[in-house]
Length: 160
Image (cartoon, rainbow, N blue to C red; front, side, top):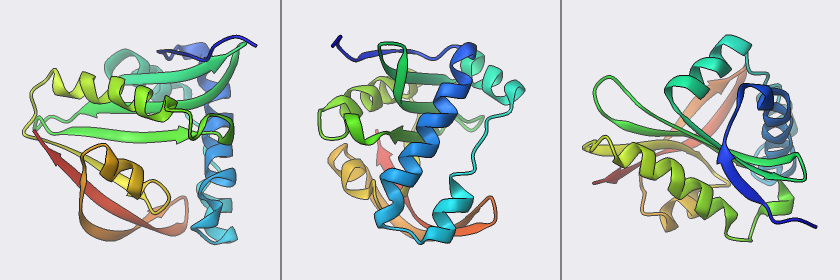
């Protein structure tokens, strides 16, 4: 079996990224959220124009092996020069192998190049410990609505 690669996402990755995103929510986050929350939250489908904008104007890396996508990390800079890790979604096959850290560090490096005052993330219950290990601290717990489901998240920041 070939090594898992980290590479920039391409427009043609959209469907496979959708599938990995859904799997991450259903198979990884399901231990921390209700079945109803998971069902609504995992009903994710990127719109082609939004995906193209992400690829062209933001930072999006994927984990790939044998033309199969096992994870995605997305970051961006806001107009007020705050950095955001928009999301990190990994399938069970790659969790615990250090790949989440590697892909996350690539997106964080992109953000740091803009020299923002801070970087933030809306982290899941599932990912909170990982983000703390990456240097973020929880600022507050929030309920956000994702496709009709109220989901508890942790607003977290990293001061640079």
